[in-house]
Length: 250
Image (cartoon, rainbow, N blue to C red; front, side):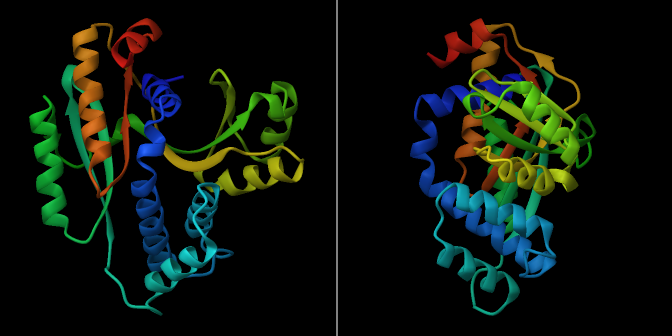
């Protein structure tokens, strides 16, 4: 389990996810609009839109809100036009960072994200500078109480999954991006509840952060980036030992 994943797990337990619920709704709606604009409004033929709708429903976004977002994306209703932009940079300690944002003003968002890096000890990087250190994957989370490792492994592997990882209270199922929907469907049809399913970026290498001070710097940058209204996701390749992570998040 990567340090970044562990950090998000701790934040969730501390209630930080609830505080960001309003922003989460806004991000999910924007993601649906962008997916509908780029691939059409039919989720049966638009895999990205299908995934975004599933994610929105998992987070209790009303179906009529989702439908309006799709219509704005396809041009059936008027609305602000958002585009997806990706920024790359480094956190303290040489940690690679990818920031994905949805914005209606690329220049404004670029300047603000760059400023967040600078104010928190990081640096902006050219496109492609760190992206090679990450792989696009599908991630599903399943409560351990819902399925045994062997049963879930067999079911998920038959549907196209690559791996299952132990995250403590949950199983993390890793899939190729194109197989996320198929694996999720197979698990659900077998009667096992899926907590969440999403496309993400997984680091292929990690940077260990054993110094508490440096770990605090990196996590402060992660929080600042994630708090920005236009940012939909932040990925990083730091790995913080459990003892250090518990200390800095206390």
